[in-house]
Length: 183
Image 1: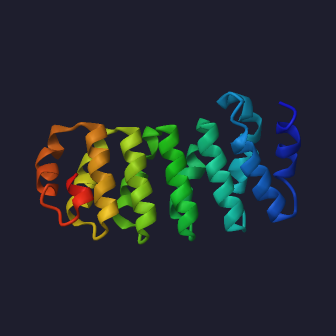
Image 2: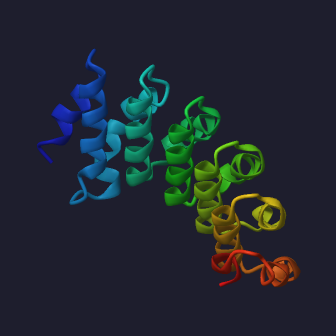
């Protein structure tokens, strides 16, 4: 693909807007196979530590689109980023990758992140990964999270994982004050 090489070069620009747009563009190269964008992965992983939050967000999103295992460690590290939108996109990327090695870190984020948008995305990611290690934290969030959208998404995730251990918690959720959680 002729666009990949100049976009990969642009990831090293001194201008954060250029870096952000190059990362975004690489993620948008949807007509390419996942592996075909692999040469850009090392540069995108470096951008996960960029000083500009928008660059970090674009890099996380692109890495989620590419789904290359070389990005996993960097994405897990970004679950602790100071900006919640970076944490959210990193969780989304790990969910897209169905990355089982991220389950422990995702579970920690589910129970401790202060932003509900992050917890919602983390719950979704855990549902995508479908690892039974996530059942206990998801059950805890289902009955204790103050945000109904988090509870709704954890119920969905538990359905995706299909663990009998979750049945009593899901039955309890049938009495949730929010109709979307009950549904």
